[in-house]
Every structure is written in C-alpha cells, then in structure tokens.
View 1 (spheres, rainbow, N blue to C red):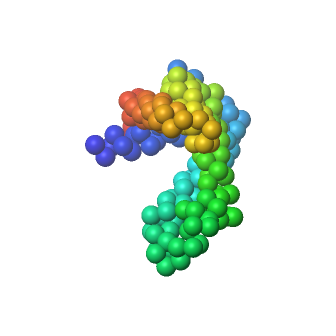
View 2: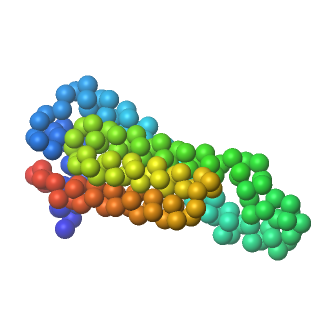
View 3: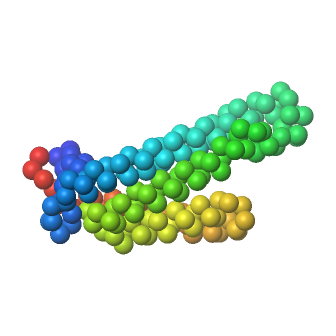
Length: 165
C-alpha cells in the first residue's frame, strides 16, 4: 500500500504525459510555475476559509454572548470590514487556483482532460453559487460536479502506471 502511494506521488512529477510522450523542458518549467501559482491560490484560500469557519464556530458565539449589540450591528462577521472582504476574496482565490491547476492538467495531458474540465466546470458552478445571487441548489450541484472531477483526477492518479519504487 505504501509503495503504491509513493508511486502515485512520483507520478505527479514525471516528465511524460498519458501517451508516454516526453514533455519538453519549457513545458515542465511553464507547468511548474502555473502549478505553483495555483497551489498558492488554493492553499491561501483554504487557510482563509478555515479562519472564517474558526471565527463563526468559536469566536462569534463568545462575542454574541459578551457583546450582543456588536453582533446585532455587524451580523455574524459579514458586516465587519476585513472579514467581509476576506470571504469573497478567499472564494475567488479558490476558484482561480483550481481553474489554473486543471487547465494545466488538461494542457499537459498527464491526467485525463475530461476530469480536469469536469473539475473546472464544478468549481465555476460552485463559486457562482456561493456568490449569493443564485439559489443554494446551485452550490450543491456545483459541489457534486467539483467533487466528481476531483475523484476522477484522484483515481486517474492512483491508477496511472507507476514508476519503479
């Protein structure tokens, strides 16, 4: 089991695409830069979202108990300047990061392009649903599409021919 996991991780860094064609140095460098930017966007977004969840679950209830007038004035955080700015910013980073990552996956042909496009479609629908202008069912549909794309990418990575470990 551990060998298979190590092989999957090493497949992330191989220099060949799904057809076994060797990628050029410029493609690897371009891919590395795009993936670094995508990774920074996604990780930063997830950290910000975790912070917002921490605020809502652990800090806001204490503030509501100790200073109910503050919560009545500002709400659960959406009315507090920086917090109100961070939530849409984190969502935008999340969407942009996954779009960059999946566009690069589709371009490099290292994993199935259909999985990358499904993930892009899902993250766009999910992000649009979180905008507040669409019904919550759109968020749920987007999250199912997004998760399906991630599962497909994960299975493709797991099932890809492994290098010697």
